[in-house]
Amino acid sequence: MTSTRTLSEIVSSLRRRPRLRRAAVGIGFLAVSALASVSIFATAPNAVPETPRERAWPVSVMIAEPAMLSPKFSSYGRVESSRQSRIRTNLIAEIAQVHVREGEWVAAGDVLVELRRDGLELTERRRAAELDQERANLNSISMALNLIEKSSEHFVAMHRISQTKLERHEGLFERRMISRSLLDDVVQQTSAASIEYQRHLRELADFPNQLSAQRARVAKAEALLDQARLDLDHATIRAPFSGPVISVDASPGDYSASGAVLVEVADASGFEVRAPIPDTYRARVRRYLRAGQPITAAAMIGGVQTALLLTRFAGNVRAGHSGSDAFFEINAAAGSAPPEVGRVVNLTITLPPEANLVALPVQSIYENDRIYQVHNSRLKALTVERLGDHQTQAGEYRILVRSSELEAGLSILTTQLPKAISGLLVRPIGAVDG
Image 1: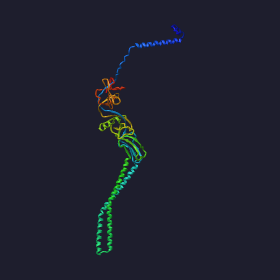
Image 2: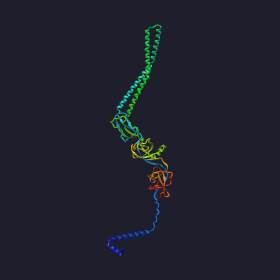
Image 3: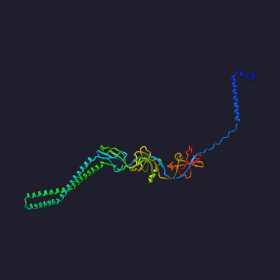
Image 4: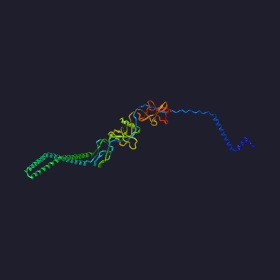
């Protein structure tokens, strides 16, 4: 038989057992909490989803104003000289004086180095004496020719008389009017006269050869004397042109060696800057150069802002370079700080002006060839050609672009947005001056 416990019995049991009492209280609390949560969710109102609002990005814009502008770009170059003379001497002589030092400016014709002249002057006097002797020999041969030409008539007459005498004695011998011995004497005399006549003819014929040979000796002596005088003149070494002295390798008391460099001088009119042209501009620069349009550059050279002019492109590509170099002419004047050969300078190169170019801030350019038009508070992408740099009258840096879609009056975005795309809602809040 199952017995049912009364509530009083259960309460009495819980009083006797504290642990069971605490468990019962916890279970009751959880049951009440669950019942309250169910009641709240059952009676709460239904949530209505909120429609998201599109964000309008605040941006700055500028009005496009296409104009005739000159693109610029930067490069670096090295100062060189197209005419740099390494002055040598073919003389071996003691160096008497050195009149210049490295870095000095010299004018064309200025004395750089002097060699001792003693030995060279002795050589000149010896060559002059040799020339006098050869000229005297030429005069002797000329006089001998004159005398032998005057004696030609005598030899001809003697030859003719001897032949006539021989013919007469032969006739007398045939008629037995003279002896054989007398005829032999006449034959001997005629032969001797004929030999003398032939010798005269040979000497007369050989005199032109003797004259030519002696004239050649005179010419050789004259050349040796000219060389001696030239060597004497080369003992004074002068500057071939105006410009700075690059190096001096001579000192008084040293002996010059044949072919050794004594002084190195750069031609002031040959100063130029050799600079690489970026691939972006190379084709256009070549086209302008062929068309005869001037391409100028500016650089700080010797502490002075100097104007340069593009003259030509290099004929080869230097090792380690990907493109051709261009040469910019420098006009350096005496008295100014001369350019230092080998110094690297920064160039700002200016191209001829082009039409329909728009100068935009750097912030307007996206991925180098895209800008955005602001129309009805929405962005519209425009593809542009980047042509170079520009500086406003206020000194602000701009980028020159061109596009068939870029018309005057368009509003162009001048703010760099992180996620700019066509159709993006924007809110212009300011304008940038062009």
